[in-house]
Length: 502
Image (cartoon, rainbow, N blue to C red; front, side):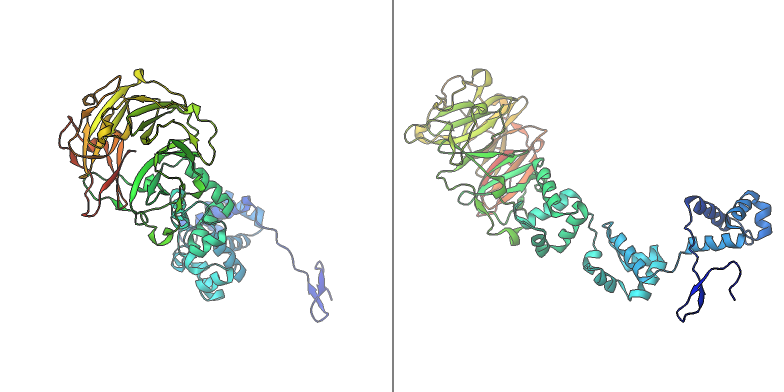
């Protein structure tokens, strides 16, 4: 006979069975009430949860519990389930592991035992261990043990080290084949590889980069942040991918770079085709370099085709100096754009882009001579002109080595063949209006020149691919023809090649 007031269904054997009653979940208000009861149990002495003690000491709480749960025993049962929780099933354990893995933090059994012993116990009971759980979830156990919350700068830098170029990893699978961990770090941070590549391109647009020319006009890029400022007089760090370094230029936010070549033409560069090198990439990037151009001659200056305010200064082997506004450079084809008319047998031997803050342009020769021309006396030329004679004595081989722009408060730094640095005070460089032999600034043969101040840095590079950066304040100002100070320590078969302001 059916019990009065009970709905009965049919069991597996055809008999009647009680219908399961669905218990509604606790509301936030109910949970807050139960937490209040749990707090009383934690703070007060033993026996505080008996009916009489609770009614006497916490009359309002007792009344609310009876109103909501009918009896104190029912309320205590719900509080116990809230505190201890329901038994963890296999699915709940796996779901909890996935939730923890999604945070990017390492997930270890030791950590579970420390933080959630109930979950660790269920994991062992249901799955036997962490490795089995990760295998069922399709996640490599070694990746779950590592912290995938890699900062963006570090993540982008590590991918560039492995890929060489931005387009080196065309798909997520290519990245996973080289570094499964980085693939997981990219997934955690960006969700997908497409979003990662977009973020990488945006990040690179604001990063100071070094464009390096080495070997037979081979071109590479490097993050300038990798060249940490140390001090002068040391060897620097070795770029083992780079041999016979010839030149280096700093570039920031330069989406359309171009090189001025010694034949007087501006040739655009496709940044996507220029690989990255680093101090730790020898085993990966070797052989992935691409040539900047098949042109004859050599690149002399890096130019941003988006720069409309700069002035392109070019000095030729025969002593001509041409100053041309970059606003005249409009359409540059792939095969180049001539920006100077050269006489027979002449070529551009030095060039630089002068910013709006430059007050004087200085021509420096390999023999250590220098001469300056004030901005007020500059004669701007058209794109197809030859320029004006500004350096005499070039018939004896004293052609220009560097063209340097000096702003207010900047001095001229010279790098000698012996690895020494000489910072010549700006007033030691003579200012002329017409052609000049210049003044002998240093008796040491010069291999590089750059602007220098106490607030900027100097980048030095050697033929074997060593780079170091030091503060301009570490190089004391001297008069012309002084000895100078140690700049870079050289091996017996190495030689200094590059000096740039950074």
